[in-house]
Length: 299
Image 1 (spheres, rainbow, N blue to C red):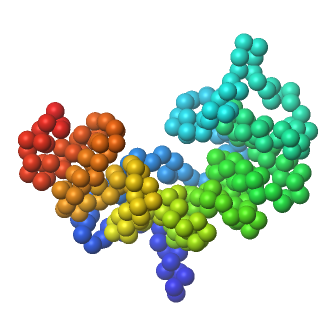
Image 2: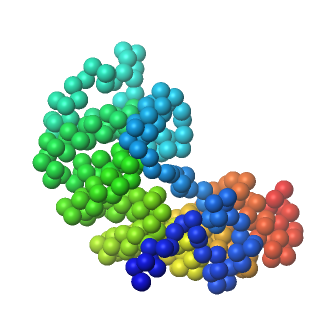
C-alpha cells in the first residue's frame, strides 16, 4: 500500500492545499501546475518511438532554428570550431564515424563538436555507442553521453538505464541530476526526489541537488517544503536568483507581500533589471499598501 501511494503522486495531479497558500489566488498553467517564480524551459517533454525521435532530430538539424535549448547547449569550446572560409570544421558526411569514435584520443572532442555545435543527435548517438563499445561498456563518461542523446531523442527509459548503470560505476552530480530529470519527464516526482536525496548523501549541500528538489516540491504544491529547500540553497549560494525569486513568489501568494518585497529588492540590488521584476515589486508594494512606491515601480 505504501509503495502504491508513493507512485500515485504525479505532476499532472499537483497538490493545491498546502498550508498558508490559497490555491485560488496562485495562478496555474493549463495543465494545472502552479506558476513558479522563474520560467524554466524543457519542463514538459513527452517520450516517443525511435523513428519519431530520429525524425525529430533530422528536422531540427535541417531547420537549424535558434531556441533556448540550442543556445544553452552551445559552449565556447565548441563554438570556436565554427566553420570558416574553407567550409565546415568537420565534414560528417565523409567522416569514418566508426574509426574516429573508437579512438580515445579524439572521440570525446568529436562527440562534443557534433552534440553541442552541429546539433546532430543521430550522429552523436552513433559516436557515443561506438565509443562505449570500444571502452568495454566500463566508461561512465560515455554512458552519460548516451543518456544525454536519449534524453534529447525522447527515449527516456533507455536514458534511465544508462544513468543508473553510470552511477554504479561512478557517482557524479551530473549523473544524479540527469537521472532525476529523466524521472521528472516520465512523471515520477517521488523517484526524482529519491534520486536527489541520494545525491545529497554523496554531495552534501550541493546547490544542484537542492534546487532540483525544490523545483519538484514546488511543482507538487508543497510550497513550505520548497521554500525551506530554497533557503538552504541561499545558505550555500546567496546570489542564486532562482531561489530568491521562488521564495519571494511563495511569500507573496502566501499573504506576506512585505517579506516578498525584501527578496525582490535583493534581486534588484544584484544588478538584475527587467520589466517583470519591477512589476513584481510594484505588486508587492500595492499589496502592502505602499502606493507611492507601487506607482514609481510600475511606471
